[in-house]
Length: 293
Ligand SMILES: Nc1ncnc2c1ncn2[C@@H]1O[C@H](COP(=O)(O)OP(=O)(O)OP(=O)(O)O)[C@@H](O)[C@H]1O
Image 1 (cartoon, protein in one colour):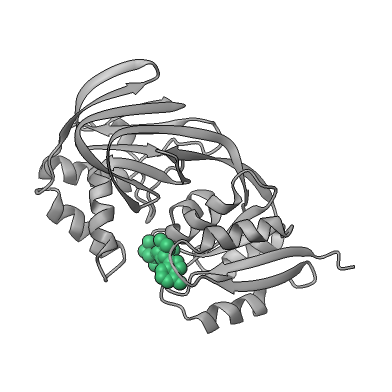
Image 2 (tube, rainbow, N blue to C red; image 1 turned 90 degrees about the horizontal axis):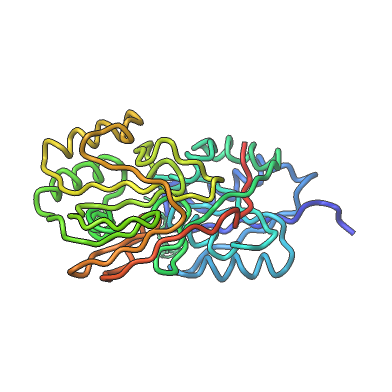
């Protein structure tokens, strides 16, 4: 019987720019095949990866690799929650928030080297209205941007920044009542972001001090925003200074509930999830095994 570790690559063929052939060839070339017994499957549609990941865990595959961006990572990781199967990431998207947080190299070859070493740890995950997230979730402006970005054919950081700068003028804060750490906050909300990892992706740090193993959400509240504050916030995000920015407030907590006067948009890991007027956001401590450098 083979003593090699079973590993399965789940590839989203629609994410990123490298072709199927490229990725499979790189895996063949750089994966340590004395150590690993590998298989490769491709997703056929959105929402397919959680099924593929759950099936792999059920078959006793020890490591499942999400090959794609944060959307694919979220779907694969969702299927592996609370199992003994570890998630690995070959980043192929434009944001790659979890891979960057964990220090996984952005190139396929470097990321495969991390897989070859095979070092694992366990991280927290979050839930927003029952939907799992691993980097960030949010209500308000960041979810609105996710909804516009989802319908945008062009990807990448520049498109994203252009979109934020254009839309910041069109989006308005809404009144909410939030319960954080047992304290009730009656406030305006332009955006409330819930961070498990430190960044949204693309090295935009929403919660520079976030610890992905502490069982706590880092909550960032921006009550109101105008263009000048938006520029300041963007600068602070890219320079890891958001925790000290005047226009944002920070809390660490296990659970948050929010009641909004009007329905607000929400997202998980950048995937737009629709609108709701009540939210429950909580942590699932140490719920996912992952491969790390
Ligand atoms: N075979 C497929 N056909 C169409 N959509 C897919 C398929 N497989 C996965 N998806 C969907 O593609 C979406 C985008 O994937 P992902 O975020 O990984 O790539 P990306 O958009 O290129 O990356 P980024 O968001 O970092 O720019 C996911 O939410 C997933 O549901």
